[in-house]
Image 1 (cartoon, rainbow, N blue to C red):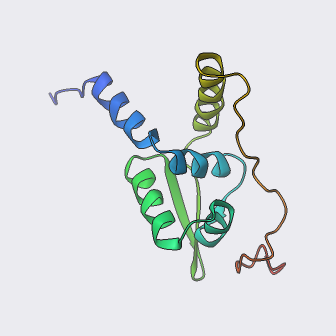
Image 2 (image 1 turned 135 degrees about the horizontal axis):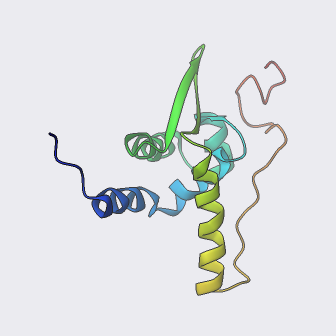
Length: 123
Protein backbone atom coordinates (compact mmCIF):
# COMPACT_ATOMS: atom_id res chain seq x y z
CA UNK A 1 0.00 0.00 0.00
CA UNK A 2 1.39 3.41 -0.99
CA UNK A 3 2.08 5.86 1.79
CA UNK A 4 -0.36 8.80 1.71
CA UNK A 5 1.13 12.27 1.37
CA UNK A 6 0.84 14.42 4.47
CA UNK A 7 -2.09 16.78 3.92
CA UNK A 8 -0.29 19.71 5.52
CA UNK A 9 2.70 19.20 3.23
CA UNK A 10 0.41 19.27 0.19
CA UNK A 11 -1.34 22.36 1.53
CA UNK A 12 2.01 24.08 2.09
CA UNK A 13 2.96 23.37 -1.53
CA UNK A 14 -0.33 24.90 -2.66
CA UNK A 15 0.20 28.01 -0.55
CA UNK A 16 3.78 28.31 -1.80
CA UNK A 17 2.46 28.49 -5.36
CA UNK A 18 -0.06 31.11 -4.24
CA UNK A 19 2.53 33.19 -2.38
CA UNK A 20 3.37 35.56 -5.22
CA UNK A 21 1.32 38.68 -6.07
CA UNK A 22 1.63 38.24 -9.85
CA UNK A 23 0.57 34.60 -9.67
CA UNK A 24 -2.43 35.61 -7.55
CA UNK A 25 -3.32 38.29 -10.11
CA UNK A 26 -3.05 35.75 -12.94
CA UNK A 27 -5.37 33.41 -11.08
CA UNK A 28 -7.78 36.29 -10.42
CA UNK A 29 -7.87 37.04 -14.16
CA UNK A 30 -8.35 33.38 -15.04
CA UNK A 31 -11.17 33.08 -12.49
CA UNK A 32 -13.14 35.42 -14.75
CA UNK A 33 -12.02 34.38 -18.22
CA UNK A 34 -9.76 32.05 -20.12
CA UNK A 35 -6.76 34.02 -21.41
CA UNK A 36 -3.72 33.64 -23.65
CA UNK A 37 -0.23 34.72 -22.60
CA UNK A 38 -0.38 37.88 -24.72
CA UNK A 39 -3.62 38.90 -23.02
CA UNK A 40 -2.18 38.27 -19.55
CA UNK A 41 0.98 40.16 -20.51
CA UNK A 42 -1.05 43.22 -21.51
CA UNK A 43 -3.22 43.21 -18.38
CA UNK A 44 -0.26 42.70 -16.05
CA UNK A 45 2.07 45.13 -17.82
CA UNK A 46 4.82 42.50 -17.61
CA UNK A 47 7.12 40.94 -20.20
CA UNK A 48 6.05 37.68 -21.83
CA UNK A 49 8.93 35.53 -20.44
CA UNK A 50 8.11 36.63 -16.89
CA UNK A 51 4.40 35.86 -17.31
CA UNK A 52 5.23 32.48 -18.87
CA UNK A 53 7.50 31.68 -15.92
CA UNK A 54 4.69 32.45 -13.45
CA UNK A 55 2.24 30.36 -15.51
CA UNK A 56 4.70 27.45 -15.47
CA UNK A 57 4.78 27.58 -11.67
CA UNK A 58 0.98 27.62 -11.53
CA UNK A 59 0.75 24.75 -14.02
CA UNK A 60 3.29 22.66 -12.06
CA UNK A 61 1.22 23.24 -8.92
CA UNK A 62 -1.87 21.99 -10.74
CA UNK A 63 -3.68 25.32 -10.45
CA UNK A 64 -4.03 26.08 -14.16
CA UNK A 65 -4.50 24.05 -17.30
CA UNK A 66 -3.94 25.07 -20.89
CA UNK A 67 -5.16 24.32 -24.37
CA UNK A 68 -3.71 25.15 -27.76
CA UNK A 69 -5.65 27.02 -30.43
CA UNK A 70 -3.46 27.44 -33.48
CA UNK A 71 -0.26 29.12 -32.32
CA UNK A 72 -1.78 30.47 -29.10
CA UNK A 73 -2.04 28.73 -25.76
CA UNK A 74 -5.04 29.61 -23.60
CA UNK A 75 -4.96 29.18 -19.82
CA UNK A 76 -7.79 28.60 -17.37
CA UNK A 77 -8.22 27.61 -13.74
CA UNK A 78 -7.85 23.89 -13.11
CA UNK A 79 -11.02 23.89 -10.99
CA UNK A 80 -13.90 26.20 -10.17
CA UNK A 81 -13.21 25.83 -6.42
CA UNK A 82 -10.05 27.91 -6.94
CA UNK A 83 -12.12 31.01 -7.68
CA UNK A 84 -13.83 30.57 -4.30
CA UNK A 85 -10.45 30.16 -2.60
CA UNK A 86 -9.21 33.40 -4.19
CA UNK A 87 -12.36 35.30 -3.18
CA UNK A 88 -12.15 33.97 0.37
CA UNK A 89 -8.47 34.99 0.51
CA UNK A 90 -9.49 38.56 -0.32
CA UNK A 91 -12.04 38.54 2.51
CA UNK A 92 -9.49 37.18 4.98
CA UNK A 93 -6.76 39.67 4.05
CA UNK A 94 -9.21 42.57 4.26
CA UNK A 95 -10.30 41.37 7.72
CA UNK A 96 -6.75 40.85 8.96
CA UNK A 97 -4.89 43.72 7.26
CA UNK A 98 -7.12 46.52 6.06
CA UNK A 99 -10.72 46.49 4.87
CA UNK A 100 -9.90 49.26 2.37
CA UNK A 101 -7.49 47.10 0.34
CA UNK A 102 -8.14 47.37 -3.39
CA UNK A 103 -7.79 44.55 -5.89
CA UNK A 104 -7.46 45.80 -9.49
CA UNK A 105 -10.45 44.89 -11.65
CA UNK A 106 -10.08 42.51 -14.57
CA UNK A 107 -10.78 44.26 -17.88
CA UNK A 108 -13.72 42.59 -19.59
CA UNK A 109 -13.38 44.34 -22.92
CA UNK A 110 -10.98 43.48 -25.72
CA UNK A 111 -7.52 44.98 -25.32
CA UNK A 112 -6.49 47.01 -28.36
CA UNK A 113 -2.80 46.34 -27.70
CA UNK A 114 -3.27 42.56 -27.42
CA UNK A 115 -2.63 40.72 -30.70
CA UNK A 116 -4.77 37.65 -29.94
CA UNK A 117 -7.70 36.91 -32.26
CA UNK A 118 -10.26 37.46 -29.49
CA UNK A 119 -9.03 41.00 -28.84
CA UNK A 120 -8.70 41.75 -32.54
CA UNK A 121 -12.31 40.66 -33.19
CA UNK A 122 -11.34 37.51 -35.08
CA UNK A 123 -12.33 34.95 -32.47
